[in-house]
Length: 247
Image (cartoon, rainbow, N blue to C red; front, side, top):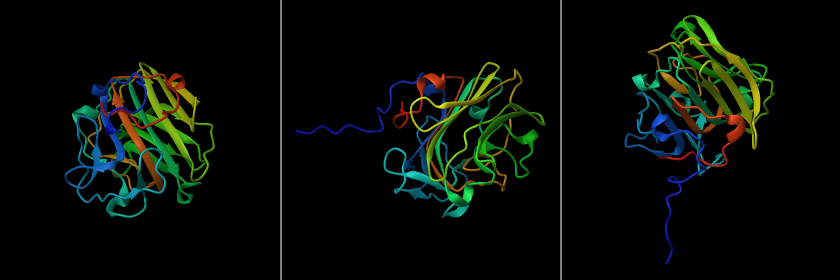
């Protein structure tokens, strides 16, 4: 007699992030009842109108599919959703983490991985931004008013069509950016600020910067998770060895 075990129930060893602090979690495999990617967090966010799913079963990082971004479908396959109180950062600790794979179209140019901003990409309306610069190095920052805080530019030059784990964290006044493919990721840099992050009312986008139409990445995303009010030492927990837990 065989026993079926749900592969999405128990995934990787506990990494110190309580599930109650996870404000969104996408595996990019299951769909919700309205035909967009299932947000496996307790918030079950629904993508904005006009969004079309574009899955990639050829290049998943974990599981059976990843998310195509910048190719196919209305909105270029980028998950986007409205602002909510649960996404407010303030001075809270946080961990944004995802696996990202940049295609040739994103190399040597600005490519946003995630963020929240308006159609002008104005700092005053931006809360957080994670991107690859034209140097093919990662950069992440938050905004306080029109100024950036926790602004870190990495040192690792990324390669085309390669899966990278990217994590941007805050604990108190300490910000850090990590990039790696396996094992212990590289600490790309640190920054310090006690300032509060803007409480932006703009759209959140994965594979872009909110409603900003410039710098839309092409490639794939997998295992995108954002946790607020919790922190982990990514240099210790390392690159995740499997999909994130759903509970």
